[in-house]
Length: 168
Image (cartoon, rainbow, N blue to C red):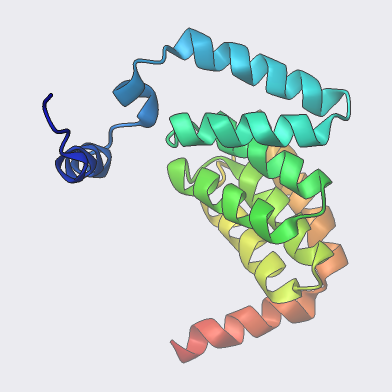
């Protein structure tokens, strides 16, 4: 019987992932299969079955860590469950995948505000304002939502950020 070199296999898998491969690709899982899981996860989310939704969204981001929709779903469930720090991490990763999508930045600001962290809430909104397109319906919608949230945060938090930027 041939001995399996798990160290060599692990190193090979690590190298593939470092070059951008996903577990989905390594395991041969199709987009259609992941979309079916997403539909189930989203259904659980919509019907208030958050623990079930959380498990499925965690599965989805494990298998395709480059899919922004999966990260948004995970962040949304974490936010509803009041696991704000985890939600911020999920939204941050989501934002990293597509900077001009204002949704994760807005929701991260909501989470920071829920944790009482006005400074980081303000920073999230500044990122939204920086990268969100101005001349699209989505851009206008999220800029209006950001303006309302900005009022809740208070201008002092934004002034403090500006002072920090001046020092850099």
